[in-house]
Image 1: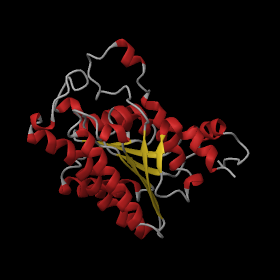
Image 2: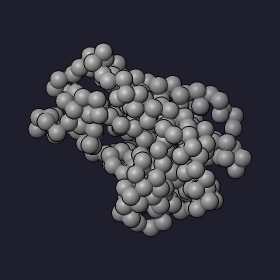
Image 3: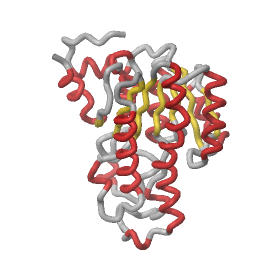
Image 4: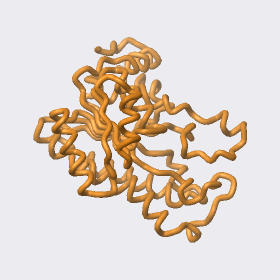
Length: 270
């Protein structure tokens, strides 16, 4: 499974995508669609025993069946501390531990403005309950799940946490409240977690696609030209598999962009 230092970035990306993650136990929150599903699929294909979560247990179980192998689907509302604690307890009972947490759960702009790309609305037009739901799912959810998992990782002697974020331009883009602020908040949280865990055996990193992706978060009325430029969610596969592999054992506090992953890997080579 070792990646040769003489390989090109492209070769290393290919190796990451096909790495053997047998024995790795992974949790991907919000993994029934979009980026979460793509990452869960990549991890499962690499041999990781993967747990996927959703607010709705049926959807999580259906996704797990689609992934096959030892994949498990459980209900977990990441906004609710009791639900998170119960879900993490169930996961540890089933798997005996976790080696990788992917904090991915989130909801997009469509929940507050279905036409946000063609008809952006100002922040004062956003319903307070819609703003709260987006921020609670992404920021509070990442905090609650990491809070439940990381102490167990520390006790077990190590682990990896990957927080899924977005382009910095999206965070401050016109008409992108509350989605942009939720991305900024989760990045700040990831940076604080990395600082708090410096010197420990738990690694914390941030991963983002590097552009808009073809997921359910994109409005249906976008033009054919715009749709053609959307990234395939599968672009998240190689970096998340690599971050779960032994090659990433010393990677901590990094912000990795999936579209630039091959170049980033190449820059790390001596």
